[in-house]
Length: 452
Image (cartoon, rainbow, N blue to C red; front, side, top):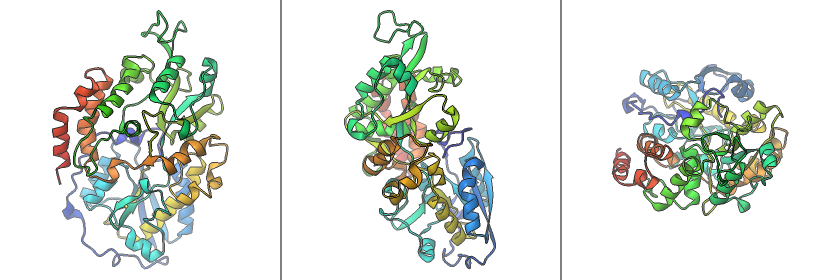
């Protein structure tokens, strides 16, 4: 889920530097600390970055389901969300349950800060850890331990303004994986949509790249956009052991350079500085942008933003060789030091089991049954584009993989401190992708991955 005030996809990019000592974690038997059941009156602190208009949809019904539990909701919409959690863990005042970042959950679990929910789920008769229950890319656990699940799952898609496509007489992006555009086709469409103030396209004589009226595409170079494109080209960031850097391959360089070339070579996308200085005027809604690659949480915000004044729709991501996407969602987790672990797990299951936010198109549910036989419960309404099932749900079920951060503890420190700056240098034209992604960076990333 995304707050309109701050996107956690951007929030998690700075290095987090978890400083909490393992000595803070109490070595107490989890079942022995379990509360006595529904008769016990307890208070649970819940920290989230989402607005009340979102969280009230599941917090209030779950509070009615468990009247013995008083939920105290705390919110932090700032870029310091993770720092706040880090500080509270260090001070021994961490919330009982909280919404956590996809890229830090397993790192925090490795630090011994998160509650293993399995003993309590067993005791309460709640489902966990099976492919029949949840789609595997959003199960946050290792071995026989489960730390959390999300209640919304996202993939990456093409958003586009249908009016813009109609005016340019260009066919809409495809709605299924079998017909996904190649990257070259995506670039050609972006050229057809891009016009300068005289209505000329990038390949036309006299095209004025300094005065572009409408850009064909916008592709932000961060991990959520980059990973599907890398995987579609057969490239990876890390080896299968997640102990070695592998983005120094020609296939990875091809993808990163192709993204940079949208702005630097073909002039069909705004540069990072142009986006920043545009102050939101370069957007699908304004008509100054034809397409954008972004996460499916934006369907919710677009539907409420445009109020039917401009028709946004979605298509599947472009590909280099084989269509591939990622499935991800921020999980709800509990502090290992909560004094009410049983009640915490009851609430977490209730939160993850609610599909009200899915009905509002903030994302897809993680439960396999809701993605298949029970799709109509949440996915057929005016908040969802008619092609949502083929674009999003079929992709989640058949064409996605999990984030590297579900299998390793050093994703943030390696990506944020080393890999992302290298990618940024390509986006600004300071280096070629081959230069930025090879050489010393491999030794540096491997050194980070070798740390305990």
